Image 1 (cartoon, rainbow, N blue to C red):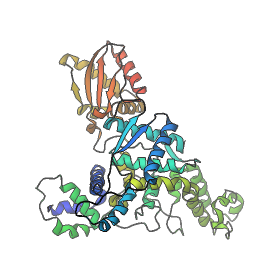
Image 2: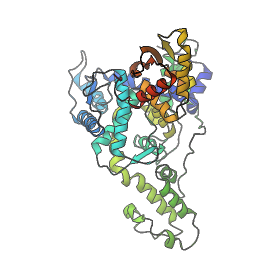
Image 3: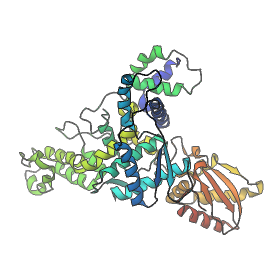
Image 4: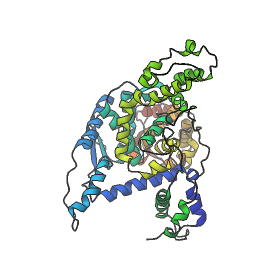
Length: 480
C-alpha cells in the first residue's frame, strides 16, 4: 500500500521539535507494538505474568526475580514455521532474543482478585514508588538519584519497569532529574545525549521520518495526497531546527571533549555544583590553599600527574564531573540502563529522534497543575437526576478547593495516575456514577474505567470528609 501526503505536511513532520509530544508518543507506541507483532512468529511470545506483593521490599524482590529470570533463561528454540528454513530464521531469532522483556504484561496483586488494565496501571504506580523507596536517595526534594544500594538485579528490573510503562502507555511520576534520561540516551548510542562524545546532528534521519509519517498516515484520511514513497527522500532532506527547550542545553567546560557537564551535576547535586563553580570563578593564585582539599582524590588516577592550580582547575572540575556520572554510579546506572534497553532498546525513534527533555516528557508527561474545571468539562455522569445537579456542583467545587497534593491524590484514586495526559486534562474523561445514599459509605473507584462511584451524602461537610478519607486510603484495586 502507498500513502500520500501533502508537501506542507512533509515539511512540518521534518521539523521534529515542532511535533507535539503526544504525537511522538503515539508513533513510538505504534512502532514498538509493530515490532512485537513482527517478532510473534519468531518466538512464542506469551504474556509476561507477575504475581506481586504490595509491601515495597517484597514487591521489588519479586519483580526483580521475575524480570531477571526472563532475562537469564535460555530462549527456547521454536519449531520452524511452515516453509521456513531453519538456518534462514536463526539470525532474526537471535536478534529478537535481546528483547525478551518486550512483551505484554499481566499483573495480579497477591491476595486480591482484581486484574486487567486498571490493575496493571495501578501496579506501575505502586511499583515505581517501591523502587524509588528501596533503591534511590530522595534527598533532592521531589527528585531522586542513585544512592549506595548495590543491587544490580533490582536496578535492572527498575529499568525494565520504566520501559514497560512506556510500552503500556502509562505515564511515570517526574521522580528523576533530566540527567538520568540523558544517560539512558547515551547508553543507547544517541547522538542527542548531552553526555555523548559526539553530540549534535539532526534530530531525525530518513528512516525515522519515514516511520513517523507511516505511523500517522495509517490513521489519516485520504485528503493528504502526494505519493509518499516517491517523496520520502525529499522529506529526509529537510533539516530539523531546534527550538528553545524548557531547560537550556548545558555547555561543556573549557577543554572538555564531551561527556557530562557541570549543568548535569547541578541538576543532581546543587551543593557540589555550587562548590565547583566557586573553583572556576576564583581567579587568585592561592587557589590551591582555598580549594585544594575538596575531595579531588575521589576521581582516582585521572589527576595523578596534575597539580591543582589556576592552569589546571578546569581539568580538575571536569574530572570530578566525569567521576560523578561514571565510576560513582556505574553499578547502578549500568544495570538500570540495560533493563531499559531490554524493552525499548530496539526503538530507532528513541535512539535518533529524542533528546533528554523530550524523552522525559514522553515518559512522564507534563508537570502542570491539576485543572479540575478542564477535567469536569469532559467528565460523564451516570444515574444522577436534574435535581442532583447542585450536589454535583458542590462535588466539583470541593475538588477545586483541594491543595495540589490532594488533587493528585484524587486522580490516582480514580485513574491510578496523577499525571496530566499528553493531550491535556480533558482527556481523562472520568465518569461520576451515583451510588445510592448513606453517610457511612465511602466513595469507591474502578481505575480501569476511570469510574468514580459517589454516594449522595446528607451534607457538603460529609461529602468532603468521606471523599478525602477514600482518597487517602485508596491503595488497592477498588475500595470495598
